[in-house]
Image (cartoon, rainbow, N blue to C red):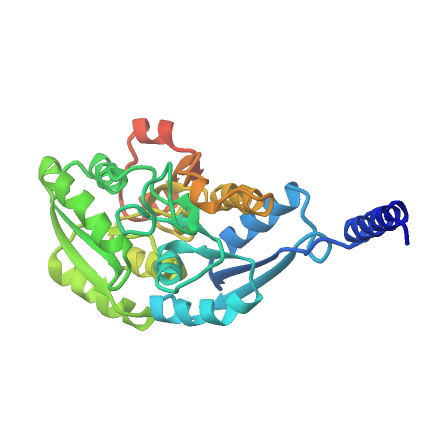
Length: 324
């Protein structure tokens, strides 16, 4: 065979191989989304956000929603280990989910939704440059958010002097919340009582401890466990004449008095854009963690009336949602 013929045949072979590669479908990314059965708002936001970006399950993305029943680091770690073999990208919901994902040596990108303080608890290096394999959205806009929740209660009840703070015992959000509240409480002339919640079965006992503390109002620390107990918490607080402030607006819809926090659906939609960036080839370490684009103040006037409270006009004017 002459050198010219060999080069010609080689060129044909290369062209055929290139054409074959171009015709082969690219790998469809598999996204495993891990969340609790009660976190429907996050799931709704993530899925709608991906749809708006042009993703169709089974066509250009494979979505696998894996739910856990126990909102604990151990339980979520086990669920993560179970889901990882099926995942190119892992999406986790809540601070407990983020901590569980961090505890597992993963080589795949992780996107977290609504983690309270990812820098403070060691998930990332900084919001602008997360580093590692994790990025996502924060639940709290600033470290002073819990102080603002206390200020709202004080605005409603100017004579307020004792406040209970209820949170899951092992939730990383709890210490973060207490730092903010402990700094603000002296300025508000308020003393705080920390009430630890061990499990979903411990809520009645927690309210007994709140009563014994002499608290006149309650702040509920936002987390996976407390989110799942929204309705029961609202019912118990109302039955015991206890005004409450929450991070989830869903708690106010269930009968809580007031809340200050992000819209979980909108927050999850922000996270969907990060999944899209990773699929398009951006390094997860270089994708900035985003804070909530919007914070919502919700007030339940029915609950206020039942508690014999008057919501100040200035607070009503700031409220984004009012239940009458």
